[in-house]
Figure 1 (cartoon, rainbow, N blue to C red):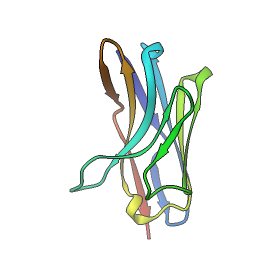
Figure 2 (cartoon, helix red, strand yellow):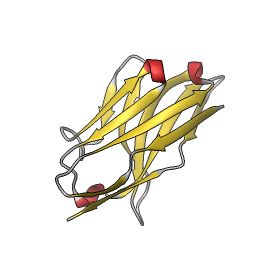
Figure 3 (tube, rainbow, N blue to C red):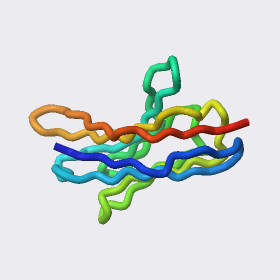
Figure 4 (cartoon, rainbow, N blue to C red):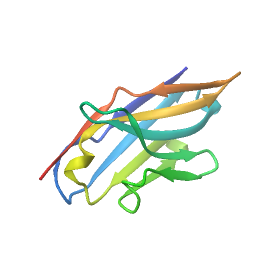
Length: 118
């Protein structure tokens, strides 16, 4: 089992910045990638950014050049630095950890609200 705890959401004006954090605990040795997803009201959950154990990153087109995902392996924590925020970035942001243990398993954090006012 992997347990994820997110922090850092809040209310910000358009053009502002926020940093989300996600701390992992439990069976972290089996994690092969971590990422951030978001879900806006009435929309499906979508991938925002992900980072693999090799450091490979992947971003949604809508956040490229504005968001940066990074990790601190010593703290088992993944960060999402969000700059130049737009009202359309408003959503609940979820941390995800994918492990490989006799197959792929996904774990999710509780979600943190990000609201960008215009």
